Image (cartoon, rainbow, N blue to C red; front, side, top):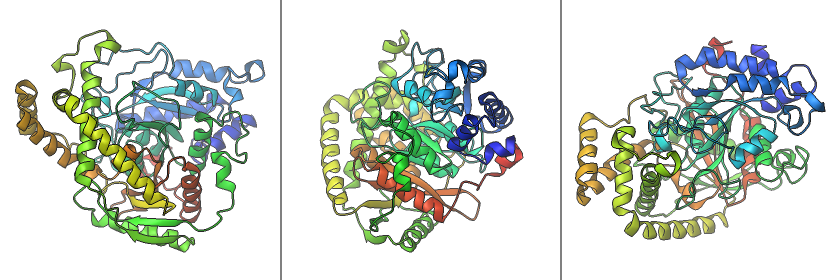
Length: 501
């Protein structure tokens, strides 16, 4: 069953369940076995809910598969994992990678989880994430680093690093993820997966409302069609037959129509430069799209990325401030310095220091940027650009040095404005040098995806990013399916996946 399990995506596994060729319990047993074998190496799963999932699987066809049972949904019986960040699952811990939140147990499901359950997905655990989702790598002090199945010395990215590592390791065919600055697309790129960030407002809100509305939730997956169907089931198409005209899954079967006019962007965005690997991946993607009949036109975005950087950093600092200093509204306990990592604590103080006077300007810049990108995408169908500035980095490469950590402690104690600005810029420089290509589309709210088309000579995956106008997920998914058919990646597995069969 292990090999059969890996041969199918979520839709394929659900079809086996519907035909009664396999039971939901058998699928779950394989997923758990794979989790128990792989997780000691990759540290992707931080909350286990095996027994409750087994009980749900045992009830799958009870009462004729009523809506309350797994037998009813289009993805009935498929094992699933939820990211341990800002998406409550009733009865499960929601630590958000933080010592302060580590004992928080959700009392009820988030609206997205209600839709996930209705789809038939069987939640059996939660995945590793950086503290409050702040960093583009997954190395929380609370749980320890998550590792990339393609190379255990390298990061799976973040903040949905645990989700991507679990999918890449073959534990589940897709997993819940969220994206406030690239947190679906970055780990998808690192782990050789497909990752779509939906348009702002496409799905029910999750977590606390935050300024800028940067975050969207969806999944990382091994197949495009899984992503399309799940988007249908969580964003308003759940009452329509899977694949019906007008659905996202249905869009994959539609004729491609006229070729897309694709703006080929080699701007490094917030990064200082793109590596040779990434430039090669972009050129390869442009050539592939051209061979499929699409029209590629090199463009420069003409955006003041310094202003974009400042706006994103200020909104992010205010989000950190809320997660730290308003934590007592969620946990009932006053937050203390020793309960948060030094970077998180410092970012929260920066948000408190500058937020009230600097946030309005950041939001104004966000509106200007959105208008500019909207205008550009009225002239082009799709943008092609980098997902990351280089291949996956090594574990620990972006962690603050001892001196940097000392500076952060001093700054968060003395709160000297000039030093706070200096430290914020230095921390951002380090992060954006690798992960500075995705934030643009969180600020604008437009949908964007990372597609796994390229592996470098060291065998590490490098995704390329496509974005389109707001509400244009069908365009992206149709293009992704075309690329997937031309350059299949589903059976390209990391050595760890084979080792666990």
